[in-house]
Length: 162
Image (cartoon, rainbow, N blue to C red; front, side, top):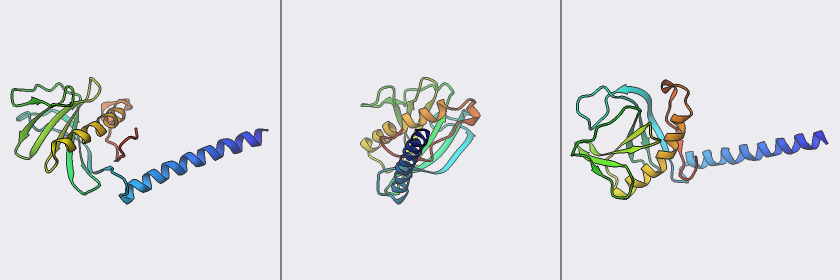
């Protein structure tokens, strides 16, 4: 009986492992829409769109399945939005503004963290979809950290997976 239970447990974990490996393999091969962290996962001082500042941010740059890139900054610090920031039409509490490098959007994650996204070469619908996909993943990653300094960005984001 114990052997049967162990075999059942082992076969489940092997199946789960195979599913996970297949999903990662598919994402890496580019057969599904995914976002890949190309550089970053570094702490820096200074958030774009807020003038000269020393806001502590976790930075990263992601690529899409078609090779386009966008930048992200995550912060726990309070952000003051002046009149240049306008509400995003379809995303609650999200704001955006144009800067020289493209469209900068700020999206709250979990009441503590805020994600800043810098897009250039993406239409408004694509920007909104990327923010909808990334926000829950970013929130999950930073909320699991015991200390702020242990926070990180996910290496691969596959739509629909947390």
